[in-house]
Image (cartoon, rainbow, N blue to C red):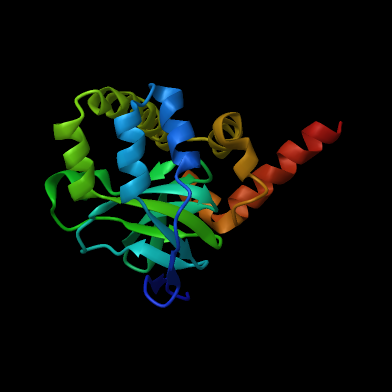
Length: 211
């Protein structure tokens, strides 16, 4: 299996990043003050990352939160030679290794882009400044954490299901746009099944739709 490439030559800093997509999403969760918006505009960094590159490698410390402007990103860990996908997200979502970001210990997961991806990055140092200097931002953060905790709960629910058909049905219920966008090997890994099993299940679902 070809290993993902570390983030390096595939990363390019984009000049004068447009923070509007990030501000729009954050405003959805809770209205930002002008001070918050100005701080983010001045302190986010634009990144262009090529397909298959790693944003974060297991064992390294996570120092940033990333917002996906365009593209797709997954988190994964390894067990021997096997990749286990733990989450997959696309545009208008935030990604980070929360455990490593919070504890500043080495990450236990890898973060990889699945498509050529445009990102906005905010350093942990600037994130902490926002918490301390702008108390209202803690409300934004709390609502974001509630949103992503709910996502984690749904992933845990899928992991506990035993039938492949039920796993895939639940995946379609919450992530239908990903079904024909993300390579099947990553979806199979995310659902905890073999690629062959996923292909069989998808054929069953397609036949039901066609009847």
